[in-house]
Amino acid sequence: MSNPKLEIKNVTKVFAGNKKGPNVLALDQTNLTIMPNEFITILGPSGCGKSTLLRIVAGLEEQTTGDVYLDGQELFGPSSNRGMVFQAYSLFPWLTVEENIQFGLKTKENSASERKDIVKKYIELVRLEGFEKHYPKQLSGGMQQRVAIARALANDPEILLLDEPFGALDNQTRTLMQELLLEIWEKSHKTILFITHDVEESIYLANRVVVMTSRPGKIKADIPIELEHPRPYSIKVEPKFLAYKEQLTELIREESLKAMMEVK
Ligand code: ADP
Ligand code: MG
Image 1 (cartoon, rainbow, N blue to C red):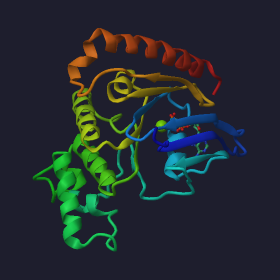
Image 2 (image 1 turned 120 degrees about the vertical axis):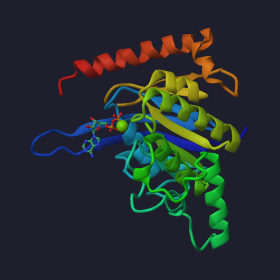
Image 3 (image 1 turned 135 degrees about the horizontal axis):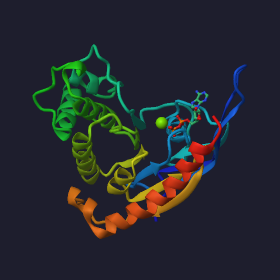
């Protein structure tokens, strides 16, 4: 039995209020353990604290109480051992595709030729050969997100954190990106924590779907997804997939209703 890759222990987050509003309890006693090579999706209604939880794991936000451990080490602040992909607009517009991917690579640790090889490897992995010299604004949304994934992977992080990375893409592109990410996971065996509010996406990608309650967010259900790999996109219409979809749609619907009824 291996040791956990990531442990989130009793994490709460309170955002301090101001003159116009009270304190916000965004996360309440959240616990989650992720084993090496797992692909975990977190499914929750809008505003339940998903981004807050991921930002805490990334070290971009400080929890109010509780601890987060990566490979048994308590985390304080951001570091290259966690790679982060946001929903959109995270590339540097003044850098080309290859410069964006190379950006985080340490010049001390990698020689110029090593950096070039790493960039080439990840450009191939996300299938962007021929676009090395393009700038982000010359790329479609899906291509930009592939650059963002390549950039996060180039640092060889211990865990890849993705916050609704395909949320701004059209449906067809989104499906292709899901397939590509699964393929990358099957090849690289990274540990992945992926946030989404899309039920189908959460099932298709994951080996476990973790459902969060509406605000304050905490873990409501943790559902193992027993679907084989590789997973063709056609699995989405198979009865066993649809059974998960029914179960999770019901769980998330209760939470969305609660969130909708809440006085804002
Ligand atoms: P999700 O990603 O699930 O949509 P978030 O984690 O972004 O939700 O937000 C959870 C709750 O915390 C929301 O009610 C949001 O308004 C609040 N919140 C998030 N960030 C801040 C902040 N910096 N200051 C105050 N409140 C915040
Ligand atoms: Mg969010």
